[in-house]
Length: 461
RNA sequence: UCCCCGAUAGCUCAGCGGUAGAGCGGGCGGCUGUUAACCGCUAGGUCGUAGGUUCGAAUCCUACUCGGGGAGCCA
Image 1: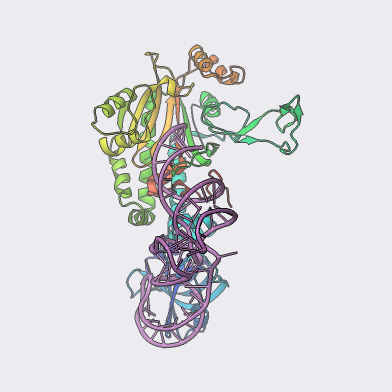
Image 2 (image 1 turned 120 degrees about the vertical axis):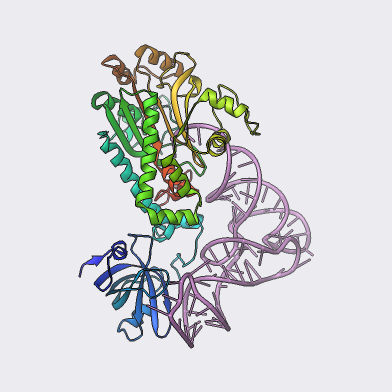
């Protein structure tokens, strides 16, 4: 008999069919006359109840099962007389595939703290929360591709190893094959020519600059891959290794980019609401009882758009007491961003046109000479979920900005070349994938929305 | 990296100067179409590590390690 996934079992039109179920025991409830098993196979949040009567030849096997055991069950699908489930399986035979010693198996049939579960990252996918997270994460990833594919964006794979060490988005991990206990040196200086690439190499902090290359040929492109930041960041919103989505759009100015960002977030949240109903209800019940309302609000609302200068004015006249003062020219603090998106406007806010001195060199300079065409999308609880800009496409202006920022013109000659040979206005942004999953699910800590989190002093599994 | 908080049984925590407790989980027994099942019994801990104060430290002090919350950096 062919195995059925539990998700498909519950989608059956009617009971009465023979089924083969394989999965893991969540709990067992036994009495003298009957044993109930809750089985999960990860295809859905819902457990399947297996009923094993006393006179069943495999009742002793069923009664001996403990949490975590893997089993194979053949039986008949029947309508459940009990509360809590539509169908259950009247067992014909229960086969134990793999034991799970209850003395040592760390998962119990009760809630565990996320901190504890992180220590057993090899077993936490079996929990309700982490299973739901994995399915939603998968769904968001799928929606990212469909969004761009439907718009004829080309999926570009940008390199993970890069020799550029000044991409301007934070500290980088160095990649080397040199023996750190015996580093080759020449007059005290490291002989980088002996290293694998013949010069210092690093893990990428962004695929943007390379994506721009392809946008200047294929018009609309996006990347979606791992990104690395060696910042000593210890917060619930930062990882040393995370995934980022970076569309890059030719013949597009900042207005078009904000529209793309808004459509994008609406598509992702709408897709999850439509396709992860059960899992989202779970998150709404156990993690954040506002998350479904928030997502529905996003689908039905227009994002607010304000300039940095307007934001500063708004904050200064808010009457709100902030720990940090609000001054034009300094970056908005987390508390300021949260006030804007959570209290003042209560929906996603797109802040544009930041002072040039607090933004990256590649952002297009406005005619005022003071601000750049930057854009941050702020959402409740997470803060910045998207950062992007219209790129500086004028070579002379870009060169001045690079000089100011201390960026080598030689090393980025290829980037400058794009402005010499058929330059066009173009724009792009980066969306933090884990922050998006966090936002969608309402899970408080970013370490619980990625299978194996990498953070300072922590790279287990 | 900075500020604050924490680390006691497998898990979640109480104890806060006189030498270790609860609930859940585990084991054993009972019972019921049960569903975070229920009832009874039972086992289980060099109180994060290293120093110090004290007649005596889980408890007070110091350092370190790890974890959490917040900040910065950002996605």
